[in-house]
Image (cartoon, rainbow, N blue to C red; front, side, top):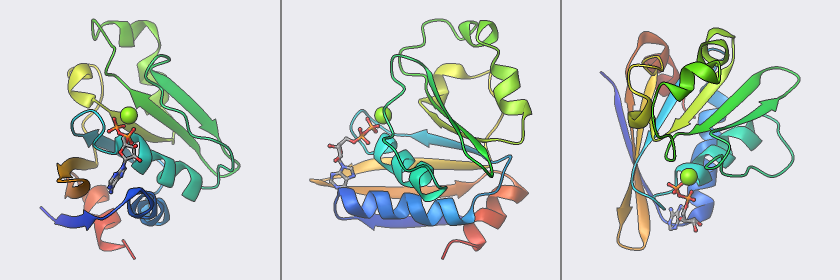
Length: 152
Ligand code: ADP
Ligand code: MG
């Protein structure tokens, strides 16, 4: 499948990459964000969410598990499953409804929810490169390949 790899020199570059993604994603897309603590997953999410039209802050959903953004054109659900104990908790919070809608779902630490969340369209890996970061984007579906091919 298509792989897209890029070096990100600073925080602003990570936000800008998120904005590029926001211009390419369509409703219904599921994005998994993998990578260590501090690798830049929430920073990238901020670029995506603000790029889609949210004007306020984008806070980390570390303690709430999910942060919803109901925009005019689309709903975005930003998950951070780092603190999820038992993935069955996702059933109780109605995880299916979030993914069933024509929403854009961004999931940090998706490995914590395996078996309870759908497979992604894009698998995005953030990694440290000295003081900077590196991003690898892999398409996991036809929709994901479309997103990569329309990245400006
Ligand atoms: P995560 O959500 O993966 O835990 P964050 O997005 O919260 O990580 O980012 C952690 C830190 O990394 C922040 O201080 C952010 O400014 C910084 N950061 C993000 N992108 C870069 C980059 N390309 N180069 C250097 N620092 C970055
Ligand atoms: Mg985070």
